[in-house]
Image (cartoon, rainbow, N blue to C red):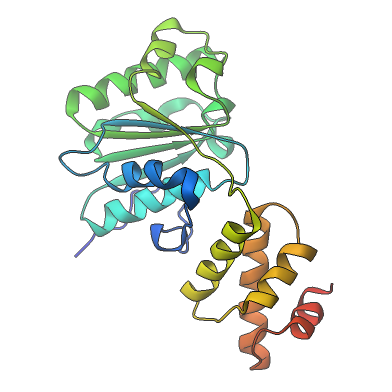
Length: 235
């Protein structure tokens, strides 16, 4: 039986739908997703660093990795520093006992001496214990204004990937259709194109619109049509 992913006693958990099954990589991100999905294997990279703009699915990938670790009977910890960075870095103590540590929003603690030192020592302990580390930030390692030279050096040790946005409407439509199919609903192409045309630009917001439509369609017992989408989303 798989273990529940390790979670902090601060209400920080994983989204149930943040899995690899409903992450559409697109052409540009296929290689990095393969590396993330293989990280816990014997051949996997010990340290991966992902960076990109908001809305490209960075946090989704980290949480998906934690879900996959749990399914493989491994212990994982998701640390979104955008939510936790105002705390002292005590949650980094003894993390080498875990199989995978997934650190989100690294940029939120860069420049803070105590956090940088704690991350440096945590990195070394994970490396020495042969455990896996997955880090996400909004910039590449060399673009971050890291104050501790030793930490700056460590951040360049692993394999770095730029998480690209989906490059055209055909990929964005495919991502929406995948998200809908995972939820058990059929999203016709014309309805999907209408959502892309009328909805927000950020893919994460579009996916949340699909979640809203799923709930509305279940309540109303209606298929997804353009008139229904207009009514349910108030467009």
